Image (spheres, rainbow, N blue to C red):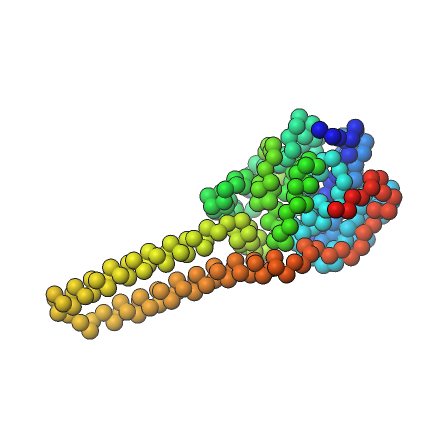
Length: 322
Ligand code: UDP
Ligand code: MG
């Protein structure tokens, strides 16, 4: 395995309105990284913050060890991570949140596993007690669907907090899709992986950028970008309903001919029409989700746009533009 000695470590930190914590976080991260390696870079990706986050990060970008990529607007955490992953040059790359929820003390543990030969070391949350009942149940349901319907096992309770080897990072960069459902993508690329449990810390300040709307969007895009199970389900449902309606038609023929009853049945007709109508709309909706996905991919828009970069000037390693 080709590695610099000592290894060059990259940390990618997505930030969105983290003005209250970003300075203390970077100070703590630098201290932690200095304790474990001599060569490192921190890539802070500002995801279109509306507060003073960028101004607070800029003073850190003076010796090439802290670099800032400011995106042109809020593209979402997944895009911010992609921007950081595209720019980093380390032999190993750690993704970490800026709100102190991912304990810095895990970094040496991750590195340890990497040194033992693991390509992907991901943090597994011990409990989600902080989160609301609805978020917990939603997450549980989502992981069940994903694991059941895709060939790849998406580990539950594993987030973006992880270390990846250069091999994994280069593989990630080969995936061209715009719809970057990272949790699925991490699982899809494979490689020798291990989950390491960690205790989620309380958010140091500010509030989570993930409301229910963003979470639902993420889950939907995760499902439509990774599995076609809903399309199949709709097909099966259609088949079942048609079969049932044929049986019912036979039953009506039977009752009319044998028992001689007719006109009654108006309620059945209305129920059938509305039911079938509903199923058709549902199917159209599911198809629509996938078509929207195709539409977004076909547009070939970049995942993110960069407004400015800081700290990249004194290049340590030649940036390989591929
Ligand atoms: N974040 C981001 N863009 C967003 C939302 C969040 O870059 O649109 C960053 C945020 O600054 C933090 C990390 O992603 O560093 C995790 O976000 P948050 O703490 O809001 O999410 P949670 O911890 O609830 O998963
Ligand atoms: Mg958080």
